[in-house]
Each structure stands twice: as C-alpha cells, then as structure tokens.
Length: 114
Image (cartoon, rainbow, N blue to C red):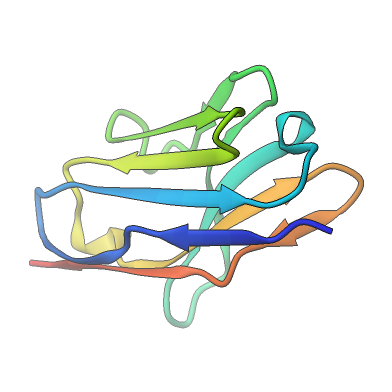
C-alpha cells in the first residue's frame, strides 16, 4: 500500500511560480513510475508530467518549457516546479504512483489569477 500526500498548491498571479510536492509512504518508492496529473472543472484529468525510477522525465506539450518534474528517491518525494503560470493552468493537481497498480493522492488546488 502506498499513500501519497501533495502540498504546495495555492493562489498565484499569472506569470508566477509554484512548487508542488508529493511525499510517498512505503519502502519501494524508488521503483515507482511517478507522475503529476491535473483536472480542471468540467474537464477530464490530464497528464502533466511523468518521471521514471531512474529520473527520465516526460512533460506534456501544454506545459513544456514552463514545468519541470524531479524526484528524490531517498526522500520519497517528487516535485512539480511550475513557472510562468497561466490562468488555464488552474486545476486540482494529483500525484500518481504506478507499479503494479495506480495510487493517487488527494489532490492540491492550484489557482492562477489573471
């Protein structure tokens, strides 16, 4: 069983930055494929970024050049650094861990005010 706890969301002005954190429980974090997803009101959940156990990252085109994903296996933490935020980035952001199944955090709200 894996538990994921996100933090770092909030209200920010357009052009600003936020850093989301996801702390995982369990002893096998280093094996997990980690990701960040987001869901805006009335829209489907979409992939934002993923990172392999070895640190290879994949960023969605919609946020490429503005968002970066990183992880520290010793700290069992994955981060999403979000720069140059836009109002369309407003959503609930969810941390995801994948090994034999998917695990999800509770989500953290990010609101970008124009």
